[in-house]
Image (cartoon, rainbow over all chains, first blue to last red; front, side, top):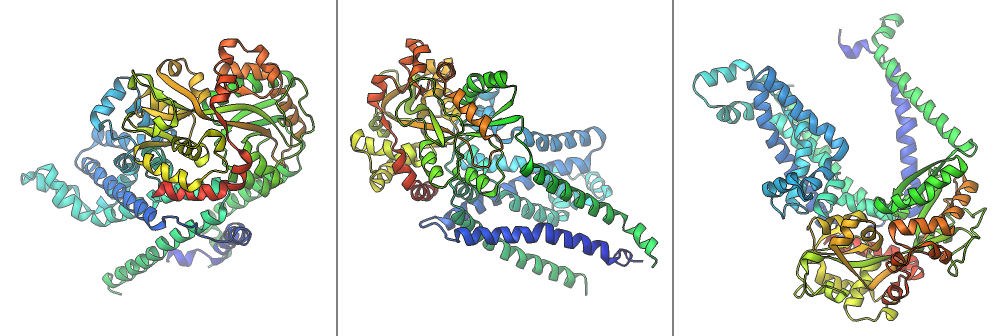
Length: 267
Length: 358
């Protein structure tokens, strides 16, 4: 019996109605009230396209870098067992926990403190690294590496250990395994990870503010500033414009992807 | 398919639904409780800016008041985001009891009926004229000064805003507060406008002058602790900074120089957001925080100038000389015109965001 047949409709309907009346409807009413009170006016002279391009390009770069940085860990996970896997798990989980505590300040401390850690940090990354676009992209990428790792790892389920062992027996080095076995077979998961991380990254505003020194703010920073100074109409207008710009292509892409999946599935 | 079987299969959905409904009931219950509860035993005091300044509020005001009244006085901080306060009051979800706002925000908030009238007014001491109002009490004058790394400029040191804008004579990375208030005035002073002719501000001219310094600004700081850290760690060589943040740190006083010439003096106000459940105790807190001894204690910690002049009698002379309200410092500075900013802040903030984003 199919699961969809086993689940009767009414608990699902109650759940759906609860979400509809307790969340979507009040939210929609609240947004309508906000718009009727404050209108919807894009601020004059606001460089929307410029900021959108900056937000989009930095987020794309961070997403790509995060996925690329995750691949060696995925390879290590596939190639080794026990101790190495535990190490990878710790390395992947620690940033998630650290991120809750001091994601940006830890980097600023690392690169500015007048102690040996600060000196090492400056030697590795350079004195001009902090408050630059590179710092924003790099720190965002490090934040997202664990996310990319777990998504790409799911994509490796189709790769059998025997494939890699076979390649190793034939004398293929591990780095080449990554290129010719792991990477092609996880491409779909990698693309999914890039898309997912991009969606998360465009909403960032603390990292661009802290690591960029206020010079390379994202669109989210402007929206937040408009809210802070009580100009809700302008904040709403910018947010709505950005939403329209990103949601419409996202829906089109999803529909296309769904259609392509059906076609390839032979329906 | 029987009902029993359906129920068993859908157990997970049921549990999920119950959890959601339970949360909703709890949420509604909390909300109702908030709206109808009696004054709580907790007083939330919100300082404008964290770090040493918030520390001074804790030590000088919150802890003694807690000792005297037995109330649980909690100190927190904000960056004077007017929209946040406005939303809090208009939505009826007021969590704060005493809030420190800028003078421009005090005027705007009074016009927009955001503040509750005080039930008790401070009487102890001699206040500067206009400091004690129906909806709030002024507390301290603080200065935004030109500061620099002493070791970066061992010989000729930057003293005026013209020097700050002169990147040829005083090379190095700069930092400025991420807000047009103050920066427009500094730009105009650097462009040759005398301090007494600043207002009404020539906004176009100020932005034109700021264009020249923008490429040299490495950091637009948002928090008062930032410029001191940036200077101490050598990330920038010159910055605008709140004088109290330099005053409050021994290391900062040793390594950072600053000039009162053309510094912007601003006044902050204690207010009670309309909708606070502790208006009476909040008023008493404000009265206490405006009393001479409490203000003198704060002045010794953070170096801002109290508007209750009686407080100065309790402050040692070597500290008085470092206050914005000390006569020579006062004469070198200008007072930010809160009326002008209250009327123009929205428009200029919008322009500032666009200007900085480009």
